[in-house]
Every structure is written in structure tokens, then in C-alpha cells.
Amino acid sequence: KTLEGFAAGVIGGTAAFWVAGLYQDWLTGPHALLIGALVALAAPVGDLFESMIKRDLEVKDTGTLFGAHGGVLDRLDAVFFTVPVAYYAAVGLGYS
Image (cartoon, rainbow, N blue to C red; front, side):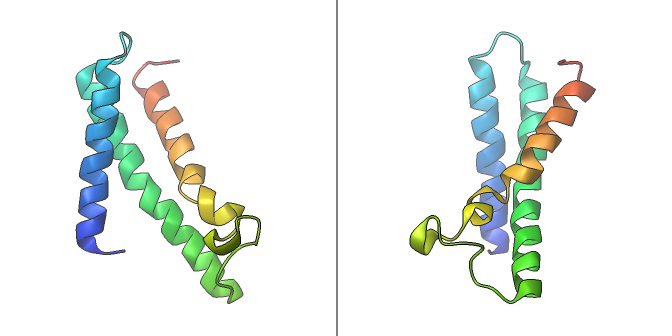
């Protein structure tokens, strides 16, 4: 979790969403860039939030379902933040 990794993740995530938007008739390029940037910014927030919970509980992993990869919450931490952000961004841009 470095500043360089954060920057690369935001740039890469935004670019990936934009490229995926090129193959959609209903999503414009600027809207794809905006939604991609918002989602890419929300993902690390979810990860940091989950890390804060684990530190507070003094645990390394949130479960053993995935073995050495941690629990379900460790795998879905970013999703809990990115899905609502993407939904409200899409609704705010008129995609409903």
C-alpha cells in the first residue's frame, strides 16, 4: 500500500473502465472516465476501512474460508464501497 501503488491503481482502474465503456453503446467516454475514476478511488477506501476493523479487533484475517488468502471480508472489502459508488454515479449521470 504505497502512494505509487495507489496512483497506478487509480490510473489503471480508470483506464480499464474507459476501455470497457468503448464497447458499450449506452455509456459515453467522459461518463466512463468519471465512473471509473470514482470507483478506482473508492476501492482503496474499502480496503483501508477493512484494515481498520481488523486492527481494532486485533486479527490478521477475517476468516479461514480461503486459506492463506484470508476470509470473505478480505476478498470483498473494496466491493462493499465500489458498488454503491458506481450505482450512485450512474444514477447521478442519468443511467437508471
